[in-house]
Image (cartoon, rainbow over all chains, first blue to last red; front, side, top):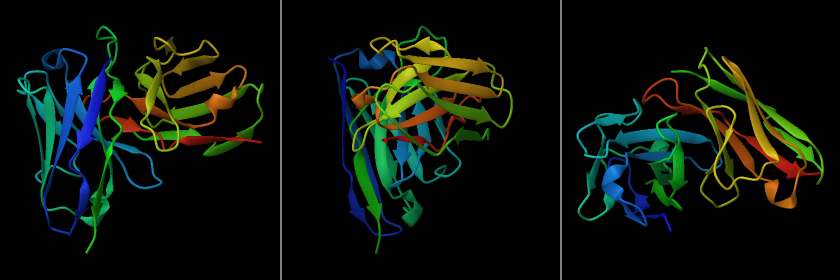
Amino acid sequence: QVQLVESGGGLVKPGGSLRLSCAASGFTFSDYYMSWIRQAPGKGLEWVSYISSSGSTIYYADSVKGRFTISRDNAKNSLYLQMNSLRAEDTAVYYCAREADLGGVIVAFDPWGQGTLVTVSS
Amino acid sequence: DIQMTQSPSSLSASVGDRVTITCRASQSISSYLNWYQQKPGKAPKLLIYAASSLQSGVPSRFSGSGSGTDFTLTISSLQPEDFATYYCQQSYSTLRYTFGQGTKLEIK
């Protein structure tokens, strides 16, 4: 079955760096665009970044632009998020999510991984 | 960015009740609206896409309607497993996707 498993979260000091990974299985990873979406503790959802199936097209939310870098390795069925210059407000559960199989009707996210918690604190 | 506002922020209801959650966009988004369900400690799950289409595997008691700026998610007869937080999300603004703040549905 389709599965996304994030890893790499943890406690980091302000200004520090962290690299998140998302291992995909159960589908042809190279056929789908992928996104990172985060959720601060007790808060709502915020889309963070997008990468096309080939990796040639990348977008970021303004809140992380210039600090975060999304990438993928289709040979390893893996998605990554390099996070630099981390701030307290980046504290959140980070989810990787696949584009939903909707025949191009609309952009939606499904499925999602279980998430990995990033805590930025001194 | 397009702002998405859900109401109410929280709602108490009983098993068997009919429940409606509203989502309003700050500008017209046509039918580019999705709904997700999130249970505590779990990832969100897509329920409804394109305002009114039921995602595969989702029970038919869930339905969505609306277009333009005003949208609704309706659960026709609440089941115990439906108590969760629900989010709307707009896909009109390409790569400026935004979510509502969520509606927490609790047992009365």
